[in-house]
Image (tube, rainbow, N blue to C red; front, top):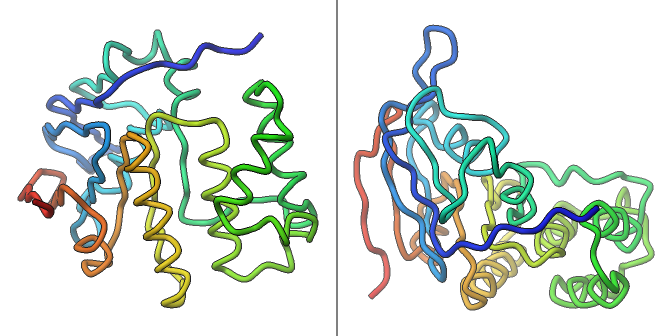
Length: 225
C-alpha cells in the first residue's frame, strides 16, 4: 500500500529544543519555512544546523516544542510527511555497483511511483545524467554523485527538499550546477532548506538566511528582494 503524501505550503518550527544527554543542541528555535523559498541554515560547528535539518527530515524528534508540516504533525503523520520529503545528505549514499537507473528504480519502488521509468528519465535529464544512466556509481566523480543524489531526492516530486552541506568537495563547475538545481526546486514551489558553511553559496541561492548560534536563532535576513 502506497502512503499518501502530505500536502503543505509551509513548515513551522515552534520553540523546538533538542537535548542529547547533557548537551543542548537546540534551545527554543522558532522559524517558518515557506513554499517557493530557499532558506539557508548557517553558523559555526555545534550551532545546531544539522540537528534542525534532521528534525525537519523526521530522522529525529524534538525533546520539547513542535514542528508542523502544514497541518501534519509527528508522530501521527510520520509516513505521510516522509513521503513528501526529499533529502540530499552530506554523502551521496548510493550503492556503488548500481547504475543511476537501477538506484532510481529501487527508490521508485519504495515510493510506489506510477510509471517509474518515465519519471526516472525525467529526473536523469534534469540532473544531466542521461548519458551516464547505465554506468556504475562507483565510477562517478564527486560532482556526478551529487547530481545523482539530487535526482533521487527529486524523484517522488517532494514538497520539502533538504540539502546538508551540498557544496562540500565540489569544484566550481559542480557548484554552478547545484545552484541551478536549487533554483529549479524553488521555481517548482518547493520548500527548500539547506545547511551550509559556504557563505558565498548561501548569498547566491538563499531567499532567507538564518544564522544559528549555540542552538538558538541569532539572526534572520532576507537575502533577496
